[in-house]
Amino acid sequence: MATVRIPILGHAIVPDTSGEVYIESYDVKATNDVWDRLVIIFDDSAARVGLHGGFVVPKDYVDSANLIIVWTSTATAGDVAWDFDYRAVGGDDTESLDQSGTQESVNADNTAPTAAHRRLELSIALTDGNFAVDDEVKFTLFRDGTDGDDTMAASAIVFSVLLEYADA
Image 1 (spheres, rainbow, N blue to C red):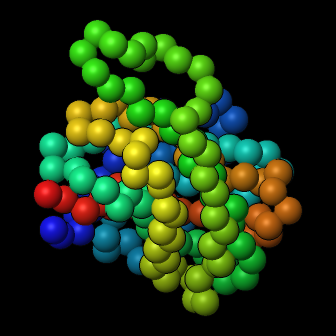
Image 2: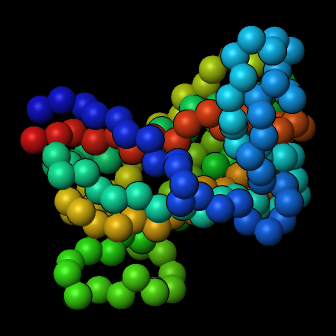
């Protein structure tokens, strides 16, 4: 068994309608214009703002599911409250893809970097039994400004969101 990480952000992501989560070129917030790429900005907000997405559970998935958020900020103080809600849908003509409600909601706080733009990595444990090979997983990733633990007064800049798991 090995630990595997796969990116889950891709063509299937859609920011919510708040206008406070959006895709932007990193050079807008970075001071160095050498390594330009797209990132997802979660503004400092008093609301719970996020993006919607989906992915398929890989063929070699066994267990040990974790969500990994790779992010940074220009701020060097405060915390960000992250929420991840999801539902896994499986089978062939057995479960509806048009369901309401979540299968699991998880959250964790992460402290701002000690210097601007330093890489941060947050790991959030997910329930292994909720996932099966080939499940279609629908999710929403939020920065929860309604949570009193979200005290960072700047945007969170997300580079990657990964599904980490043990393979066969």
